[in-house]
Length: 112
Length: 485
Figure 1: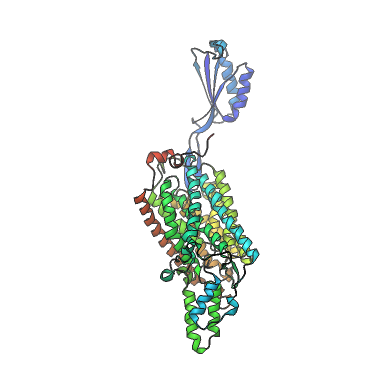
Figure 2: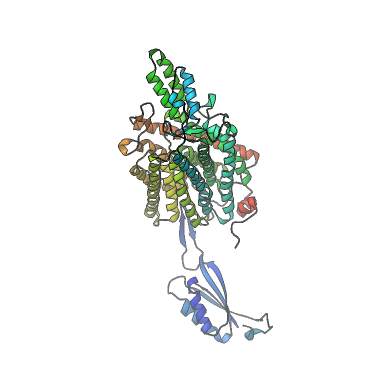
């Protein structure tokens, strides 16, 4: 099992969700996050006060997939989340040791 | 604006007794209020309350951070409630009754607890023989007394504890607002003024001196700035210069907010700020057009000026922002509108509409620079720009009134009650009088506010602890939060 963590532009969430669902993946966890990479922030001016906003709103998707599906999942996210502009986000893949479905007690691949 | 403050009968009696030789049977009959005037002034009074709650409360509230939203609303709301009660107990009397030996500066206590006032007693407007019920006048002026200290609290927003506000507001209206309102707006009124002038004209040679002496007594029965001939139609000096300089003193004495200059303190809801600004604009029609005290052409002029100066100032601020910072902001537009409202306030019944537009354009640009470049250079934390908008806008308006009231610039000129017509207009003299009145207000209010804040600091302290300030005044002072999602 692998954990795919993708930080993407918020308005791309629906496309990414559809693409992952089409791969047969059931479920994901989504968080509204803020962060920055190479994309610069912006400046806000309120009367005389100027603020540089470096943390931009992003969506973080976490989805645990069987090891044999991980490449397809990553490819699907890259394909749907990409705009070609700076700030499209990043994908991190990490191993998962163990998974349990709370309702039934099923474990690992059958739990995800 | 020069207001009558005691009933026509009292005014006539004073003139008659002092002159000793006067017989004015026509004036001795009590004038009856016109129902249209009364209806309009009742409405205008309610409109001015709309400026404060909810208008000013939302305008200010939107500009603070989420954690201080309720404290901002509460400070404005408390001010309106407290000052309304103080007003009927002794405020109206201190502002608008004869003050004996201190009459140039403040009124007396003859009308404390509204003594002697009934539904039948009246207050004069600016037209000889025209009156409104005194109760209406009390209500109308009450709303002015309530909004002025509520404007002040914006400069100390997010860091002054509620107990300090509760002590400061009653002190401030008592020692600063009531005297300044008296100095600028208290006068003997058109009835006594005209009667004294007629008595001089009618007196036989041997009575001339006595009649002239009586006329001087009537003219001297006025606040200091009113005696100078200051023009302040609806409170540019009394309300805005006054609250603006008090705001600056407050910002300096209370000190900067924790984290000022290091942490971002953006407004939490500019949506509410625009709602508040728009309510201020609507309410301001009561404030300015109501200050005519009659449903008249002058009221209509004030209303029109309140439309166009505001629009011009909003456009000017937005344009200046576009040119200097690249983008016109909504907050800039709303701030410009308020700056225009402030600037046109003293001029609203004197300037022509084209003059009002010029005044608005000037106020929009100057206040924009005051609230950005100049404020940043000086480094004081006037949280909601009370000084930059109200004091600076008020000074532009006060001086501008001296220029724009001139008939040659489309203004109405100044009515000469003795001659019964608009008199010769002395522009330079009027501008100097306006400037002198502004200086008087800056000094009285600036020094007075500094003293009162020091007293409050000694008695209860001005600020919450640093940790409490970081937590936010909503929880610390009021035990509730504005938004529970």
